[in-house]
Length: 225
Ligand code: G3P
Image (tube, rainbow, N blue to C red):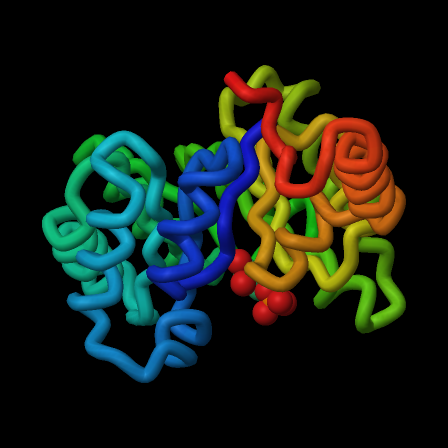
């Protein structure tokens, strides 16, 4: 299982990579624009924060295959290290995936809303396919079911493509998607902190401290080691 951060907030990324078992970062044009900073600076900042080995997924903006290929090569050069180029599953995007596979560029096919889009992208050579769970739920579709069918289709076809489930608005969506057997989820910064938080954990930790202090005295919050 891979937990990925769906944000371009470099300060948050640095902090989260220090605390949690994070496999990488995903961005898209909306996420980058939200930071109101220069694109190159943001991508270089993320790489500096996560190091060479963690993944960064950076999205193309062009709509024609030849232009997508150019952008992909630019992203690979800019982001260095372990980089995946995100390409939306429009027809020209699928063509670009085929062209880029010939050049050994790692690809994440994105903006996926149906299992067939995922299967076609995987057969074109995508390393990851990224279905959008909350955006599906918001049109009264079943995001988790779509993800489960993608997992099943990739298995049936013996494809090595991994599922990177995206677009979550609550912990339950993430949890149900994890149960489908996906290889990775990408979660925004607010939601990521909710995955680990539980009021009873906080209460339990506070109780441990106060019981200890009652017996051994105030300011004795370590084991004297
Ligand atoms: O990684 C794709 C994701 O950023 C889309 O999420 O929350 O905008 O639906 P959202």
